[in-house]
Image (cartoon, rainbow, N blue to C red; front, top):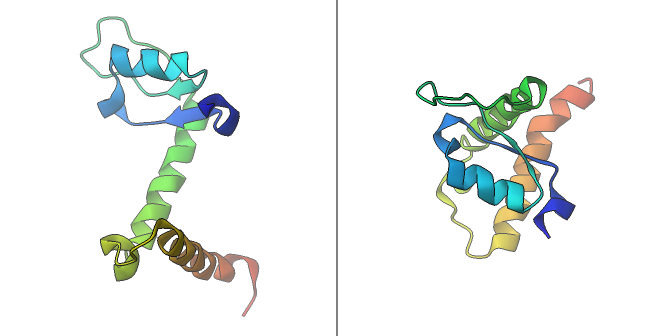
Length: 99
């Protein structure tokens, strides 16, 4: 079940639709989606959790500097995810190791 694996779905305003929110709620997951400006009755969202989305977006931006990740050269998902893990580790090492 989806709710066993994730606690909340962080998405931008493009996913603010009643059908999307209903499907997420049916799966037992919290929808952290800011309301569009043209929504008649704005639906509140957890602003603290939404701020984590920025970190994820910045990580993907840095990973896309690796051509192999951006263009998905690998044929299998295992080798692709393996290379994403290696690239993530290479990005992470400077923050935990003093050179």
